[in-house]
Figure (tube, rainbow, N blue to C red):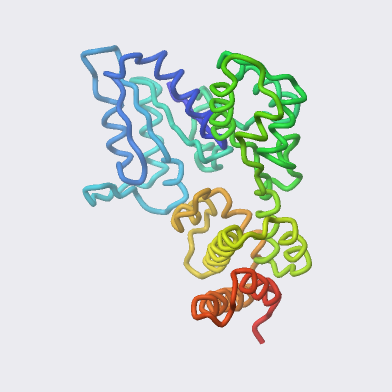
Length: 344
């Protein structure tokens, strides 16, 4: 049998993976794990076809293998051996084995959907589980249940207060443009609930405790600022800066984030990058590779503008470090005011 576990929420995807493993192999003695690109897909197929003394069939967890279908060559593993067969042929063989000889779990927590090439090869009987986080009232009820499971309580109004503090502007509903949607991070939410329920000692969580123990996130304004700088929208960038904290430490952190975003946007429009935005984001080492699609949309095809912006950021950083600019705020405003420049 084939099981496909998708994201985009990693925490929810891991819960489903654990449930499957608890069902098929509670002790873990009969489970093999592989991860692309280090482990060749041929080794996944070999493990799936190998009988075991502990159970009737083997359970194989394969992470990140759909990405191989975006490349035009066979997979190359740790030993440097490249398969002579194409990835689609390898997947067809793997799926045939899974239908007859074992349980194959394709774990893809970074993907919100199955890529078209993989979908065309996947048998209709495959079990597909998608894990988009809940929104709106459903997320509020999910929170309340999670708090109760941890031995405390939280009313609806307080739950909404916490969500507004953690995920301002994004938890009620998805953005109209999926590329700019930033869904609630369930793993982060559960971490905060763990902290609050321990602190409250089995009683009710209230707004005063939330104010004391959780940090109000400014990610909404930060992402808007980053996108405005990269796209050359100076008016929006200046407005968003005014809405953010202005301490020296905060401005220095903003500068670091803007510099990284400019670097990503310049790489996004450079020749030779992978066509798949997710693979491009992973190749660049982005903390959230899925954001590369949004970076590409914001940066647009104008490579010249991104080159000018990158040069401006490097020059501004040099001025700050050599003392020509007195404070991080000066450097930040210098980058913003030059963000709309075009190469002549």
